[in-house]
Length: 178
Image (cartoon, rainbow, N blue to C red):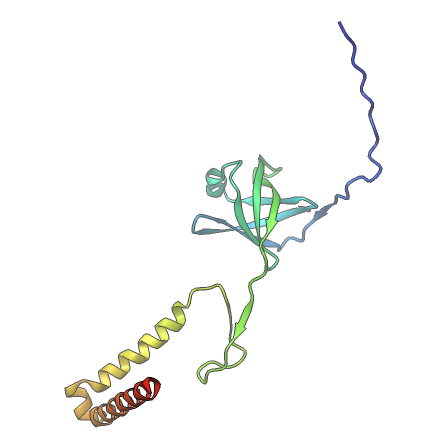
């Protein structure tokens, strides 16, 4: 039988790794599907975390399936590695960090009902803005109704405004054509 010898070379630059205990109040949020699960962070490693998870969440987590986690103002994709029981029968989940998502750009707007301190993330849907516009349109339509508008005296003003806007649109169209 042939003997094989291997030359073992020592790694001159060992990887930097650390293990850090986290204070008692550190919480994170694990996102599975559309559900958000609050979890307690027990330890931080250079490559991941150890989380204390509820029993229901421990049943839902599948190894080899990446999940999203929110921690310390950052969103990251993590991979579950091991699920074990701790000293007090709590479920401990070891996860490794795959990637960290870039921070979302913040936009501020200064319309009158909103002050400049109002900030919303750019990638969120505009459902709040659509709701606000729809509410204004609804109030406008109620004030223009024949019974309500006549009683309040707003229907004549709204009708004049609509005629003015119509004439303005026609003038802009003729100017653009010529």
